[in-house]
Length: 114
Length: 117
Image 1 (cartoon, rainbow over the protein chains, first blue to last red):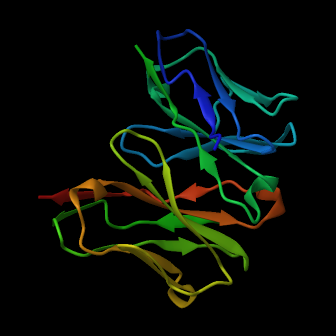
Image 2: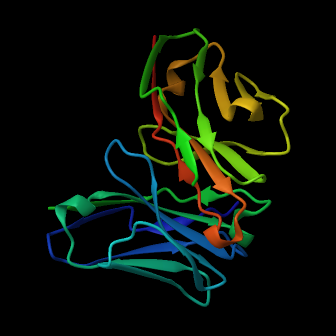
């Protein structure tokens, strides 16, 4: 079965650079969530999209932006990277914002800022 | 406000011991969903179980079992006869059924389980 695809798997950037993380949800899933997991931390909700519209927003820095495209894939854009942005970034997809459905997580993108 | 608390930060057991991971949640919603995820050292989040607030039946899946008690707002997870491969961080999570919240998951702090041979 198709899973949630995240790319790249690993990314190394320098401070003040930009990064773009991509997420391809399970086919026909209309909802995408982004989470950030720092070392030794629990996943923190960043932002979500439902039917290509922003659905909810969490503790996402202003330096970050995201969108969901017409094919339902999503991209998380991160600018002016800081050392503290080093983390594992997860994307999850679901149907109808997870109501009556589960969530499928991608394998994550490990971002290292040096 | 929604909150999930996993008070046990780390647990260490010897193989074949039983171990229970605690999860306490807070929500004002009458309809909600509870989850457990396993995060092995490789980093991915592996789905274990989803339970809705109307279903208080306990569930058993092989060596895994879950005890859901609304009266104490707890959703505890027990591994029977633990194995080294069970070593991982385990997260409990809550999804409220609030239309405005977009269905996001709120995670507990996680419990790191170490099973020694």
